[in-house]
Image 1: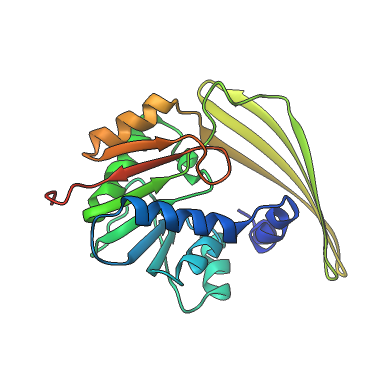
Image 2 (image 1 turned 90 degrees about the horizontal axis):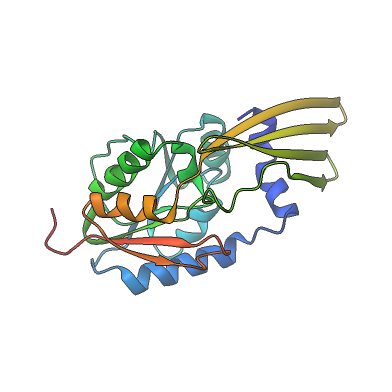
Length: 239
């Protein structure tokens, strides 16, 4: 992600009405409902600019991980008290395990393929303590994705004006979103393009990935904002 897109990422989604605080409260409730381990450590995989994990730091001892260096830079600048790591959710290796791992805001879609989805869930499962819980907020299923849609978001700040237009398309089992940005500041207007590609996985794909990782899995149809939520429990007897 470009430095401008990362810098204004939170402003753009605030303009879209995203309520991080309410979502963090829901995440906490799910963790408390399904976690069996006794600790309170939490890893946010695909943490982005760190807002969710910062809010969750009020209840847990947290760390964040993301593949996008621009996002990590923003997170470290905004929340210097939290440890943020650079890594790929498919194959990251940390020296510690956690009571809870979350992968929110459909970040799981960036793995793109079923084999990488299974790899990511297995990697996250390996980093869970016995009795720990994994929460994954899915991207759209193939049936839910509608190519050809166009959306516009506008941000009006004192020091910057932003317009972001998006167009959706599809190639096989991969959804594609083209973003066109206009960033206006006192220095002038910049135009940038960003292309996102996220895998379109079925509900069964997610269930199979959790089960193949040795987790008991439950799907909550509503989740945080209507996209659903997959909850994986690691048995207390697991290693």
